[in-house]
Structures are given as C-alpha cells and as structure tokens.
Image 1 (cartoon, rainbow, N blue to C red):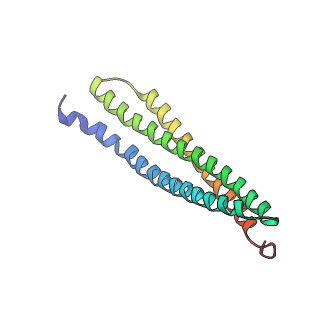
Image 2 (image 1 turned 45 degrees about the vertical axis):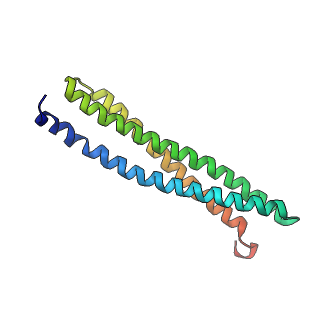
Image 3 (image 1 turned 45 degrees about the horizontal axis):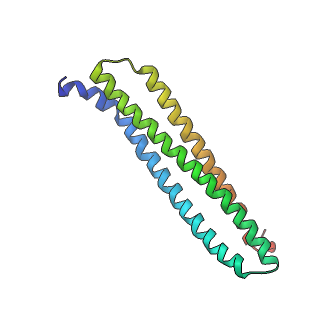
Length: 146
C-alpha cells in the first residue's frame, strides 16, 4: 500500500476527529462541574456536622441534590467518553477498511449511531444537572427571593 492510498481514509477521518475535539470540551465542562459538586458537598458536610435546627434540614436537602447531581454528571461524563470511544473505533475502522480492502459501511453506521446516541443522552443528562443545580440554589436562597 502506498501513502497516497491513505489520503482518502485520512480525509474521511477529519470529521470524526473534529467530533472528538468537541466532545472533549464537553467532557472538560462535565469534569469541572463534578469537581465543583464535590467541593460543595465537602463544604456542606462540614456545615452539617456543626449545624443544628432548621439549618440541618436545608443542608440535608442540598446534600441530597448534590449527591444526585454527582451521579447524573458521572453518567453524563461516562456517556460522553463512550461517544469518543465509538468515534475512535470509527477512525480505526476507516483505516482497517483501507488497509485490508474491507467493506465496513455497516460497522461505521452502527458506530456512528451509537456515538451520537451516547452524546445525545450525555447532553440530556447535562441539561438535567443544570435543572438540579437551580433546585439546589432555590433551597439556598431565602424564602423571600423564591
């Protein structure tokens, strides 16, 4: 095989590589959100230990939401990484089909579909996390502002 024979697969792999870059930024954002959730949970855990009365209920409610948010972000992050994994397999399949003269069209369609479905679910969970973060904010704010 000549180097010129790989030009086609290289051109075809540009789109998936761009998708990996975009999803990578989403993963970065999700990881940052998870870090913020962990930091806030640690802070509230300390407050919970030293608080009493009606503060305990508010802090406990917020901690429950933060726990749910951490699980949601973890799921979203895992699905986004899975999406990148599928795209990586697409790139490998493109080169394998060029090297070994294989018809991988059904495999490519399946991998691309799985990648996009994983990404869609990851983004839906991301939206759900934003909704949960606002719910936690309403608990934090005084009743007059709600």
